[in-house]
Amino acid sequence: MNNNTVTCSFVMDRDIYNAFKSIVSKHGENVKGNIVKYMKSVIRYDIPNADTILAIQEVQDLKKNPNKKVYNSFSEVLEDLENDKL
Image (cartoon, rainbow, N blue to C red):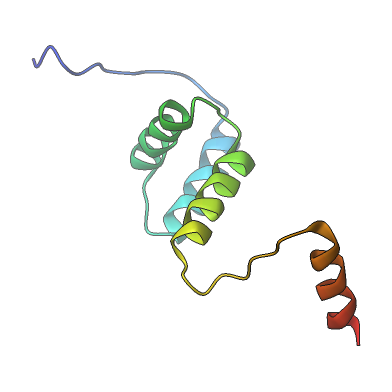
């Protein structure tokens, strides 16, 4: 056995497992792969909150977008929001 791997085993409610499996399989993933991906995200961001992880990824994507809208002040943001209402 490779010393760089570990075998994980745990018991959980079958209905929870089946619901989770159903959701991740709809997205082309499997339970083990999804759990490993989640663990890597926790390590990468040092935070286990999925919403926060998605927000960080969104900011990173926005920073890469050369066509993003930028504002010089909060009043410009409010003005833009007001113009969108019209």
